Structure formats: C-alpha cells, structure tokens
Amino acid sequence: MSNISVTDAVKGGKSLRDFLAYCLKESVLANHLDSSRHHPVITVNALKNIIGDDVDHPSEILLKSAYELVKDLPKRSSDSELLNRASADGLGETAFVSDIWEKLESGDIDTLELEAAKIHLVSDRSPAVFESLAEYALTNIPEFGSFTYHVLRAFVFQNDPKGSWPFIMCVLGELKKVSVFEMHPGTDHKPREYIGSVVVNGNQDQWLDLAGAARLWASEYIRTENYHREISHWLSTLGENIPLPPADKKAPELTDFTNSADSYFIGLAEDVIAKENGLRKIPVLEALRTLARRVSKKDIPHVEAQIQLFLKSEM
Image (cartoon, rainbow, N blue to C red; front, side, top):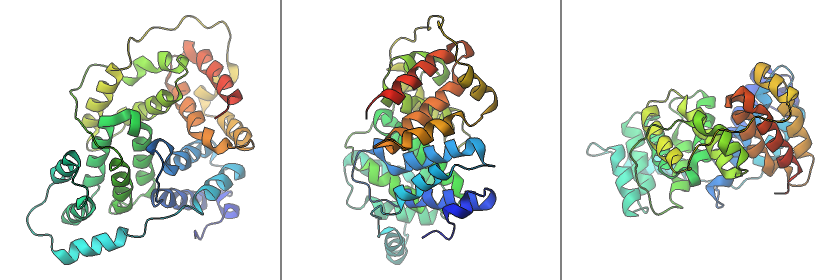
C-alpha cells in the first residue's frame, strides 16, 4: 500500500510524484496474462501523462482511476527470489545481454529469467539489460510498440537507475508470449512523416504504436539509435504516406492545447472514465493527445475529427 493517498496526491508536488511512481511500480509488478497491448502500465502511464498537463491542480478523478486500476492486480512474487538464486548460483563466466537474445530466439525460456538475473547482477544492476530488452521488443512494434514506450517511461519516472529488475521481469513476461523475433535493417522513414495519414486511417492500434514510436524517436536512451532502426523499419511497412487535404473546419480548443498544453485532455479523460469501461479508452485518448502535439498545424482539425469520432465509439 502506498503511503501517499489520493487526498495527498491531489495537492501536487512530491506527494503527486510519489503517488504516481507507486501506481506505475504496481502496474509493472502485475502478473499480466492478457495481450501486451492491454498491459496496465500503458493505462497508468497514459493517466500520468494526462494528469501532467496540470500538475498544480491534479485531477482527483484520474488519480483515483490509477489507484483503482492497480490496487487489486495479481502480482508476481518471484522477482526477489530469482535475484537471490542468481547470486547463490554464482555469477560465473562473463555474461552478455546477447545470451538473453539467443534464448529468446531459440525458444529456451525455461532458464531465461535466471540468466537475465545473473546478467543484471553482473552489470551492477544497471539499466542496460532493460533497455536492450526494449530494443528486442521493438522488433515487433504491432505487438509491443505502445507497451515498450510506456514501460520505459514508467522506469524513468522511478528515478532509480539501479531499480530496473521489476521492469526487466515485466518485459520478459511479455516477450515470452511471442515465439518469433527478427531484427530489421533501418530505413530513412521518420515518425513525423506518418502522423497525418495514420491519424485519419482510424486504426487505433496504429495510433497507439505511432504515438509511442514518435516519443521514443525523440528519446535519449543509450540504445536510441537501435530503437530508430526498428521504428523506421516498421514505418516502412505502413504504406505510402499521402498528404492530407485541407481541413474544412477549425479546431480552436485543440489548437490552443498544442500551443500551451492546457487542461483540454484532462476534461476529456474525466468524461471518458465516467462511462462504462471508460478506462480502456484512456491509452487511445492519450495517444491522440500525443499525435495532436506532433502533427502539422494545418492538420490539427483532422485530429480533432478523429477525437470526436473516438469519444462516440464503443470499445
């Protein structure tokens, strides 16, 4: 249980940050059996991002939703045990992250987590293993694109460089659900080129993946260049990027948001959550928020049109 309540978090400051860090940590500890596309870390980090649009007046509704999501999640119980076993077995010969990759590629998952624990300890608990696994996940962006962005950001938010082990276990748990991985050559494609055409195609999975990819592209991780390689390959599979026609309507509220990051999406998120199963829509709403900030100014009305269609849709 967090020592910080919603009542404290709504006051902002350190209490808000500690509360959100707690919710994010709880989400990565989840024993998640569903698709990676629906991992709770995606929803909690999306809520965190929207709440961040007004940290001086945090939304109590969104804070409560984050806590309600994580409080009863079934949790993994073997994280510490695996580190203890790895230490007791002895770290032995020099181990490399590539050893984990080989086990994934060969389907040898029985000893995968123990091997990862040994490499994590050998590396003095650095984030190197975690960031390498993120690169591996990005070889399959349709499955792991959104998840990878959100779990990386959840780790950074902890502000604990040696605390990556629960995040490693979280990523490994998702990677084990897919049997085929293949690294790809990079291309010249960049996320910003595709935002307009992806927004109007109405494919919500691509909205989520492109929103994550665009932010990873602008990141400063040790392996960012490798992330670029996989993202650019995925972009090349999306088909031709066709410029959008001029919009026939304006979108003044969304335009104001992109200029000043006001509370526009906070209000939308609160309205969405009030509806049945509304929490499931939060990651997509947050993805549209991200794409609105990165799309060409002339195309903002196209994003607004998709937001309105999405708000009326069923999930």
